[in-house]
Length: 220
Ligand SMILES: C[S@@+](CC[C@H](N)C(=O)[O-])C[C@H]1O[C@@H](n2cnc3c(N)ncnc32)[C@H](O)[C@@H]1O
Image 1: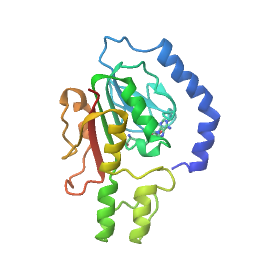
Image 2 (image 1 turned 60 degrees about the vertical axis):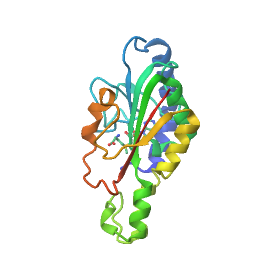
Image 3 (image 1 turned 180 degrees about the horizontal axis):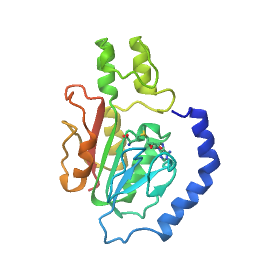
Image 4 (image 1 turned 90 degrees about the vertical axis):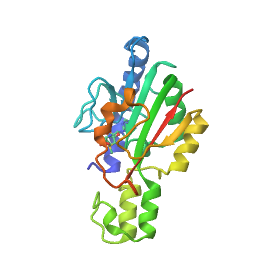
């Protein structure tokens, strides 16, 4: 894993080019507004979804369709997108209020955002229960329960926040979303017409305290 410093350096050096690329996409390469546009934010190295528009800053070790910094305004017209999906991406962003408001802007009425990330509620519960085995040995191999919690929540400084159900609910409802609900089991969706392609990414079997928290919300 690249250090946070190295990543920040890359974002500073390539930031202007990503900004221009986003503007070019928004104003000159935008898909036809009659198309059903589905957008995957942060596919990373292994989760590119064919048929979706996959957006990421990492086009070096992963694959994406639109190379952008997701801290910037999203490269879509207002009311153009049918669905957004992000999986273990939003916790990397510094301004979640801005993110959810901008996703809301881009969605068309009836559009849905399915957002998934590290489950802060479950981590706190497992920390209190001292269940060290629940936490992954990544990115650092820690034996203490506190070190393992730190691994999960902060991820060597990669994560900017802790995601809990109530916090995501607050952010989404402040942005204007309605019909906000936690998805459990994570392999399901209230909107199979939109998210069927994403469900295979949720391989976890622990439905009591899943490591990934998933919410879906609608723009009315
Ligand atoms: C932890 S990976 C998750 C990858 C994949 N979604 C998964 O669940 O395996 C986070 C992804 O978000 C992307 N990402 C994080 N912050 C970003 C930003 N500001 N702009 C664009 N992409 C970003 C990273 O490049 C990376 O591909």
